[in-house]
Amino acid sequence: MGKSSKDKRDAYYRLAKEQGWRARSAFKLLQLDEEFNLFEGVTRVVDLCAAPGSWSQVLSRILIKGESFGRSAWEDRFARDRMAAFGLPSPPEEPAETPQLKPRKDVKIVSIDLQPMSPLEGITTLKADITHPSTIPLLLKALDEDYDPSSPSAAQPVDLVISDGAPDVTGLHDLDIYVQSQLLWAALNLALCVLKPGGKFVAKIFRANEVDLLYAQLRVMFARVHVSKPRSSRASSIEAFVVCEGFQPPPGFKASLENPLGPKSVPAKLEPQAPLRTVREDGVTVLDLGDEEDGRWIAPFLACGDLSAFDSDATYQLPKDRVTLDPVQPPTAPPYRRALEMRKAAGGAYGKTKGV
Image (tube, rainbow, N blue to C red; front, side):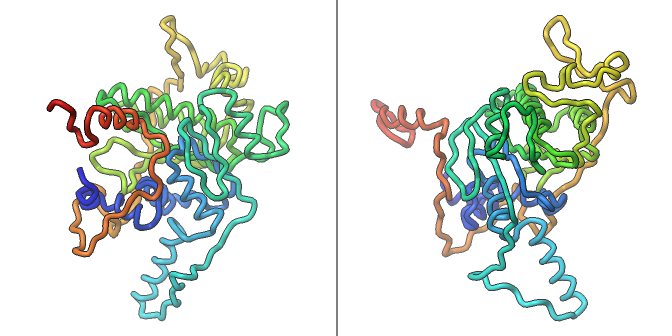
């Protein structure tokens, strides 16, 4: 598939290059912010599975540079439309060359991924494994230079933890859903170690038959849990995003990557009545959420992105003077690099090999 055909098929792919985003997934975070106002009062953020860095780029441009996107841009547009509807004079728009920037103070953003990521202004990048206990001290040190390794928790917890990570899909849906759930579980355990009370957690999920159990598990730690499908996410995809607000750990809870949500983190008074974690003989860990409604809970579903947004599954006609743009940030370590090198060595970069 050529660049022009992909531009026609995916409007967000084209818009990402035109607006300077590293990937089209930036629009997913912006549309989530329009609905849930994720960045209100937020100055300390951790971005998990960050590569290639589109979500970190959104954080950098909104929190550090003070640009207007997402909720703030939507409110400005709504105010102008409302004043126009009532025949009131709308305020003059800011010139595109000199936009009014509103940077925030004391912003700290840390991005973590196993893959290398090109640097971004104001972003601290860590190449680490979010499932390994050694990542927590590295993260806390990046958040606070005066961090004491003897302290098990952050002196200044973060306001928001986001994760757009997903496994390399195999086409076996049950396997893909399971691997994604484990990736989400790892992101959640790390978030519990650094989130402050009342903090927010946003992560990608794959919706499946048993996903309501996942919502019930998240409800143990958060006051409000919603599942959302941004308009920039293709309708043909099973991906969605959980937006958890109001972090409220149970009394006596102590987060740890070495023993994630294990017996040591559960208050002793709760263990005889409702053990949250048991290990079967075959090694499978089972979480007991109680007998009420079989431990299931249906999260409210919200679609993000109004009808004026582009349809990610539609094909749009390109203008005649359309110029194809290159990606803003080419992949730093694409998994297909070795395959391209072998194909080129075999005789050609476009599928042709010697002797054929």
